[in-house]
Image (cartoon, rainbow, N blue to C red):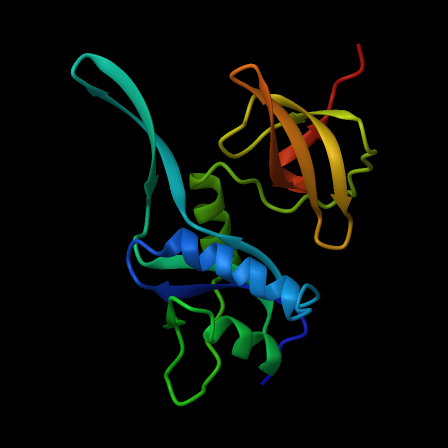
Length: 184
């Protein structure tokens, strides 16, 4: 049963390998020409500030060790690519024997994304241009500004240079994570 609509699914991975699985899956998506089926891969994590020895330290903490979220169209080919990515042990909601998994409910997705500071997909299309300065509204760079260096309209992603510690740092963001600068 193939789905023609992109939905969010949960992958089970080896604990501690979530970011490696994310990178592997994003790489496989590109090399196996699955960008029309596999859209976003997210490791559910949050910034946590702790005080140790009188010093404040911010670390990234994994909310659900051993799990990765993937937004995809469930086709046989996409299922095969994701399922056979190194470090993936299976889909949550799959009953084995090659059965397709159950997607997350929209409320579950919205709850998880808001916990991570990622906004839901906006309805209106954001028109951006190369070289444009934008506000980052979600994720680890929220509250900062960046300069658009590349746009991927199809995947609704963009590359942005953010000034961090006096250096320009490139980062990949979803269109939903940015807003145009307010006209003054």
